[in-house]
Image (cartoon, rainbow, N blue to C red; front, top):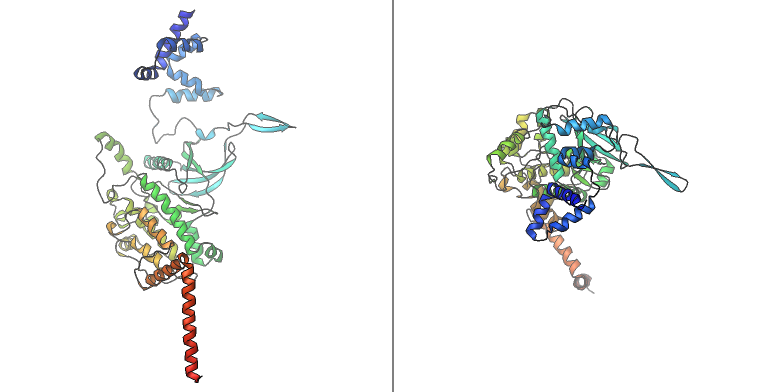
Length: 477
């Protein structure tokens, strides 16, 4: 009996733990006899069916997957797992993942005793639409397992390979960007109609486009909430998201007010990463050369993710950098996003787009190529005070048509905004000079309050004495 168990344990150890055994031999900690005895004691009840299952790894996978499944689902899983050819992108997969049911039990109380009931309903319940675009739609779902609402984005029916590739790239890009200002992905799958989808956090609030529209119309509540300091803080949230994405190696390429969500508590989220891609190195340097087979694999993906759809190009074009508008996709880097960020922030501050009035694509392209807004050239909106001059100078620098003349990184933009918030304003005109002087005086008062009090008292005494003497001389006292 002992020899049989030893032989059984050796076979198990050889078939399943060969990598671990090799590692232990290399480190000098592996004792074959001791391991055999441990395995023998632990698997003394191994049956002939288990031995057959070990000889076929796919069958072991089936036994793990099929627990609790009905026969039709079981057969469907077998067909999917045993298939040697992956499903084509333009064909609906065999598995309908959206129809899965809840897995957590319901709890009912019988007096003081809880009772666990098996799940009996579909996990996701569709509540209504949230939005729709040219490539996909977003709907609101109720997750009955976790008891929360989530958003589901899915491809519209009849999507071609190009759209599927973009959709897959968006999922994988957002999945790599784990940041508070970027919406997280919870799950992916395929629904009953063969449409690819991913589940993400349901964001409450309104887009920056909606906020700008309310401000432009003179909504008193909007103006009370979104003062200039608050707008700066919202923009800093956008910059934080882009700083993280750029450091992770992605540029957004579709930054606009409609893709910025502001929550009811001031939380800022950057949306729609469907056009994101890895940029060239800063300064225009070419990326590292890749092996031929990697380039061949990557080129179709890049080719299918260059531009927005024809119907959305005009809507996006007014926020593009000159190099992106010219179609120089291989020349894009983080500075292209910086241009778009400054266009977005300029509109948020002045409540007018710098290309206002241009309708045709040619006029817009010409404006993107040539027009740079002036700091003092924009007329103040009648519903708000004048934009602080230092913010005007800040945003105009990002409009430089030559990427080398813009901010070279989002981090540089953040540093400059923090200096402005702290009163360390760059002197670029008479207004900024006066503001800088006033901030320096105020800072001196904060740092040396006693000296300021003594000095101001002495100055007032001198002035008062001079005034008294002048009056006495005037009236001959």
